Amino acid sequence: MSINLPKYTTRKDEIGRLAFAIQKMTVNLRELFDNLESQNEEIIAQNTEIREQQQTTEHLLKEKDQLYALSFDLIVVSTLDGTFRDINPAWETTLGYSKEEMLAHPLTSLVHPKDMEETVDKFTKLRVLCGKQTPNRPENC
Image: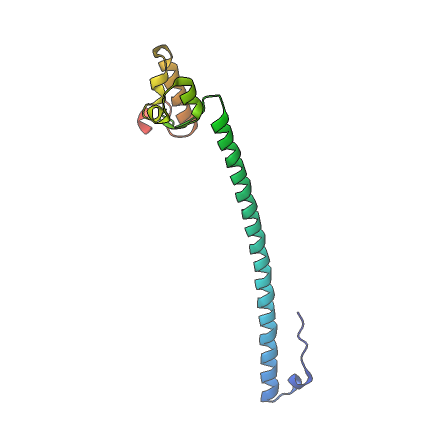
């Protein structure tokens, strides 16, 4: 930005130096203001993007909740050791147990004894894939 100095700033006396200093401060303030204005525009753009992401997330969560609630399939959220964290209403409809009753027992309580070894093996593989356990070293869980 060029400095357009008034004629009196070409003076070599105290008034000229003062006028030059004021003009220089004015230019510096204008640059600071322009910089702040640019930063403000960036913040507004970021805020808009965050708001849009929040709205998208809220929409997806509503859709997930509807699918979760209306599905006839048994949907479960569990830990990597088979502990129930949440189940959808289809569990109660299909098995006849309340949600509280189901959450009080591990998933393995529903597994037939003949299928237990394979089920435990699958959970072990899941823990390994998720980095929660080293193969053949279950003490790292």
